[in-house]
Length: 120
Image 1 (cartoon, rainbow, N blue to C red):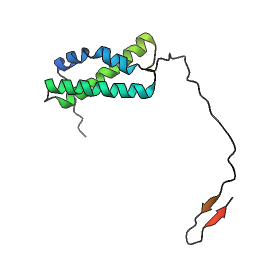
Image 2 (cartoon, rainbow, N blue to C red):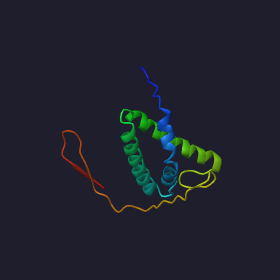
Image 3 (tube, helix red, strand yellow):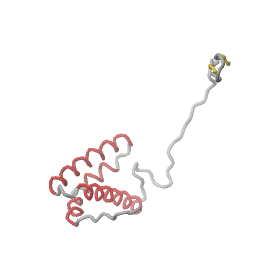
Image 4 (cartoon, rainbow, N blue to C red):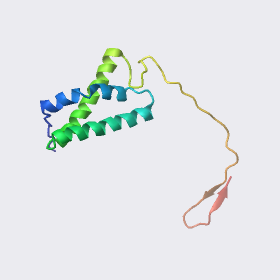
């Protein structure tokens, strides 16, 4: 299997820097659903604008954007000590669970070549 290294032109990397503030805002929204939606929107915008400038570099633009996002997240994680959702490494998400007894359950059991049996 041949794995090909994708070389990203420097001008694409330089152009990505102009979107850093917008990406940073989207990447560090605390609520996961809102964050995903915001990141997806900004990614579409960036890809569209960069492909208008560099139509022959579609794969390179997408790879560069992915690497740039990772770099932003890593910097915040290492320098500020915070995760994407704003928690520090010592913070633990609150976890809760609920238990109860199910009411009587009726189950049909199917065995090969037999009639269905009811089990309680």
